[in-house]
Image (tube, rainbow, N blue to C red; front, side, top):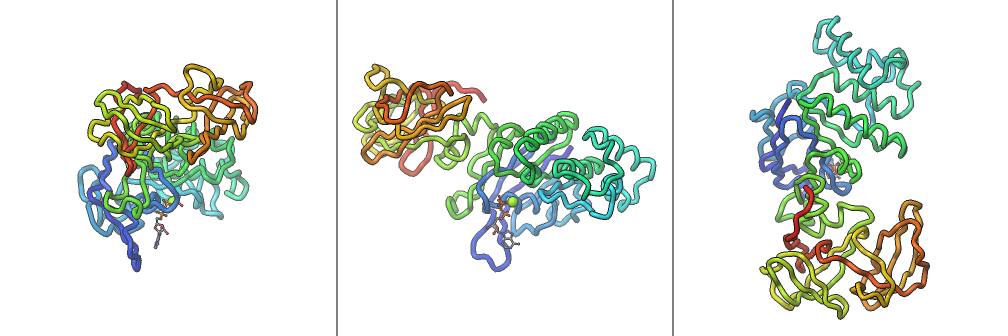
Length: 379
Ligand SMILES: Nc1ncnc2c1ncn2[C@@H]1O[C@H](COP(=O)(O)OP(=O)(O)OP(=O)(O)O)[C@@H](O)[C@H]1O
Ligand SMILES: [Mg+2]
């Protein structure tokens, strides 16, 4: 039920020269599922721990429901945190673990039982209620940790990489459970920290992509905020473009030939390419970088009229439902990755052409800032 707002939030750990969080401005609306994602060490957990009150805020304001909360005690913030490490009490049963937080607050016994039962039902923990944590699997322990948060009926849930100790199948299953939980508790806001972009893309209403402060120190920690599709289709910088999407976007050096406001021409390895972006603010003749997602590339035979550039397949990875073709275009160009159908007939050593639709290309200036794409895209 809470809105959470970070206003010019900075964090400097004692003895550290650098800011770990540099001027973060983020607003999480009531009921929103907000995911903090970014490379290891960029400060995701720090930001979450400051929200929970487990870490001091060096400067700036944290607002919970519009009220400054920097100095409010953790237990009084109306938040509940779920950690990667579960942090269950080993000597307590599942039922006792879930009830403990409410007992400490002096809640009514009948009310506690009702809330614990409701959370157990929601998470299908019924048959496990009298077991100790050591008799549970990792996924079951994490469900208990989530149950312990649910019974507190927080205004906002704070999750710090809750699935990272689980194997791939259990991760996918628990991810779905968390999405359903958010649907059921549609008034509860959630802040979810992960470095897994699949979790970020599938769970988030809003993604906050953080960067390590020193890379863009003058700009602050937040690289981009937006819906998953916004970040995928309209990354504002090379950093965002390369972080979102797997395999990651291919980046190729080129020269801007015609800087238009609707579409622009670039020259890549001697071939002209049209890109549907507004590059009118850039100088013609300047160095630029083309961004091309593996899934947006068509690999064609080298003499095909649609081929933009030619290259040789240097390696193939067959994943079953798709194949990744690594195409070496020679010169100083990086080897690019193209994602094609699993049944591709191409083999290593084939001479091929690469074709890319102008509306599928991204363009960045020399410093790595994106030109606005001029086509309508899903949001
Ligand atoms: N108590 C501390 N004292 C000093 N520096 C710290 C402390 N806690 C974290 N840091 C540093 O702050 C930076 C951000 O740490 P944080 O744990 O927030 O990163 P993260 O984004 O959660 O990374 P990960 O994905 O690896 O969990 C790191 O460089 C880390 O070394
Ligand atoms: Mg962390």
